[in-house]
Every structure is written in structure tokens, then in C-alpha cells.
Length: 380
Image 1 (cartoon, one colour):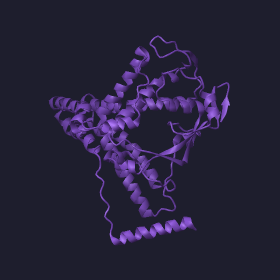
Image 2 (spheres, helix red, strand yellow):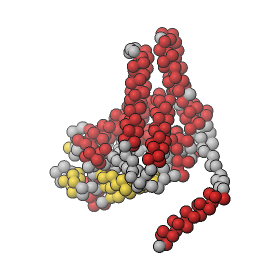
Image 3 (cartoon, helix red, strand yellow):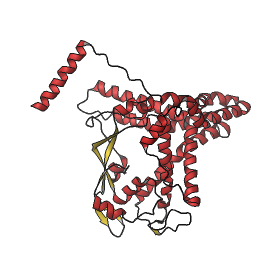
Image 4 (cartoon, helix red, strand yellow):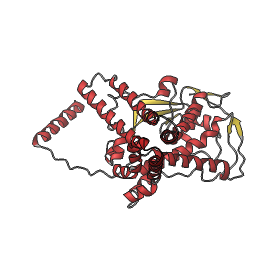
């Protein structure tokens, strides 16, 4: 890592090495939700190409909180840099100052949330943290000094972040506004804009284009040591999972818009007015434990938390039935998904019952022979 005294950040080399984060195999077997969003679980990093657009194009990755530090460079870039008790999502900002690289051949395993409610709680915290960093898009940014009270004075410094780092911050803000924008576009397309089918297809297309691009890319990136039929089967399974993700995200779109806007509103209020509870945060393990508690993830709890989806669906259906019955036939399937989103979220978050293994004599012999061959390899 090379620290530039003029720019007040690491400009060459890296102060942080960010390993590739994968989902552990047991973690994806806790629920259908974890299995759906857990990606490709397992311990085989060799047959799957891993890419990061920022690392590939700009030679600089994004830090997500788990990495290998150059302690001296990290301290030099960040020591005494930030105001106290005002930064929730510190990892991305630390990576912008200390410069982070992606290590795709170093793998770190973690569990994916088993319940949709736990994942929502985590993402809501991320959104609050991202919007607290909006001040780093200005020419002068908050610096060391001042406390956490409403009248605390914050020293201002010249913004040292590169244009790429500022773009990363903007991209996170854009991502948090996407559910609200898509929901609004659908409702406007059905009521005020025309033709309704064009706007409906546009929203579905926006959601489908990323998995389609990933599918095409996966199709042409066959590892040499993998058989063609195995590769096609893996691509088909990945495509199926991506399309199911899109269907689930479409069903939860009003609720995702609601909790995203709620997180943004809380952040703006706390940052500009009260300057309190800026570090409100629960560890993921605590959120998982609370979500698994009796009555916290049952069907009634899902309806209490996700009421906005059925409410928006019912209101839109009544308005369309009165003003544009023909459009209601087009919007009907999506409105049904919105209305049933609490049921879908409840069902997909239910714990999976582990099936007891029942092996035939032939399978047992095969596994024993395989284990002996594996041991013989290391023994030799």
C-alpha cells in the first residue's frame, strides 16, 4: 500500500485484501429462503470463475467488512479521520480510504439468513448506513471532532475520495431506491401512463435483464475439467434459481419499497435533526435468534410486518376495477402476488426438515471405496 500525503488516502497498492465470501453448505439447508439466495454452496472454488466488475475494470474492489489488513497502512489512512458515533456502514468507507482488493482464490464461509424477516432487518441496517455516508459525496466531508449530541460540531475536511469511490456510494443509494421506483412505475403505468402492457413489461424486463445476462455469461464460461452435460445442468439450475428470485422479489416489491423508504426517512431525520441512534444495530446472530423465536416468524407475524403488500394490491385492484377493468386483467397476476406476499414469505422461510439418509449396500460400498482412495492419495 502506498499512502499519498496530499490526497490523504492509499492511492496505489492495497491496505485491505477482501476474500471471496461464500455460503456454507449447512447454511443453505436451513430454509427454502436460504437455499434460494445462498448461491452456489460448497467448498469447490476451482471450477467456478469469480469476477468483480470494480476489481476487473478499475483494479480496486469493495471492502465488505471481512478482510486481511495491512495494519500500518490502515491506521495511517483512517486514524483520526472520522467523526465519533456517526458512521454505521464503516466497511465500504474504510475500503475507499485504504483501498481494497478482491482475492477470489481465498474463500470465507458464512451463513445466509434463514428467514426473510432476518434478511430484511439486515438490509434495512445496510440502507441506513449507506444513507449516512451521503455526506461523503460533498466537496467537504465530516471529520474528527464533535460528539454525538444534537448540537455537536463536526469539523469539515476536503473530500479525499476518488470519483470511483464516490460512484460506489451513489450506486448503493440508487440500489436502495430501486424497489420504490419500480413499484411507482407499475402503479403509474396501470393508472396514468399508457399503454399499460408496455410499462408492465418494462418493469419485468428491468428485473429479468441481470439474471439473463448472468445466464448467457455462465453458458460460455465452461471450465475445462467439467463435462458439458454437467455444465449445462449447473447453468439450468442456476437459471431456475435466478428466475425464482425475480418472482419472489416481484411479489415483495411494495414491502421492499416500504422498508427501504422507512430506512431512508429514519436516516435523514436522525442525521439532520436528532443526531441520535445513528449506530442502532443488532448482530446477525441476534437477529437470527429473534427471528427463530416462537411467534416471530409465523403466518400472522408475516401479515403484521408485510401488510403494505396486500394493502397496495387491494387498493390498486379497487381503483382499476372502477376505472380501467381491461388493465385489471393485465395487472391481476402481479396484484395477486402482492396480495399473497406474506404467505409466500412465511412459506419460503419455514425450516426445512432434514431427510434421514438411507443408503443401499451398493452406495455404502461406493462411499467406502471413495474414502479409501481419498485417504490413499494423502497417505502417498
